[in-house]
Image 1 (tube, rainbow, N blue to C red):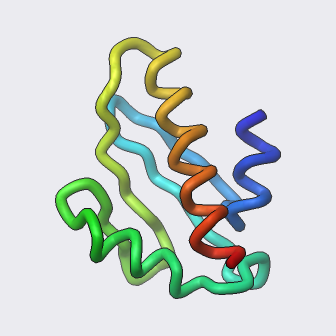
Image 2 (tube, rainbow, N blue to C red; image 1 turned 120 degrees about the vertical axis):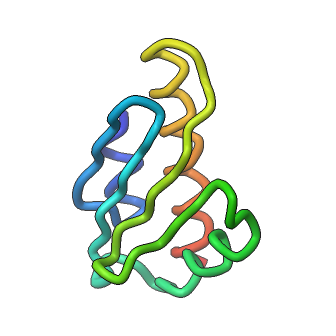
Image 3 (cartoon, rainbow, N blue to C red; image 1 turned 180 degrees about the vertical axis):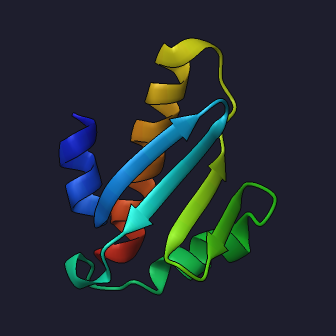
Length: 84
């Protein structure tokens, strides 16, 4: 399921370490890559976008199941922003 959501969001790689999520993007697979900037600006304490096209997200949840569920929701949110 994460792989399908990642493809829709234009994410080519996902790393989850501790409570940090790192998403590596492929701009070629997004209609509106600047939609990510809107997300980061809206919640700068939660999201950080790096110059190498990596989005760092602070995850809040308990256990690996909670973190995976949060990751799914973030990927869905990103897909809405970059594909509209």
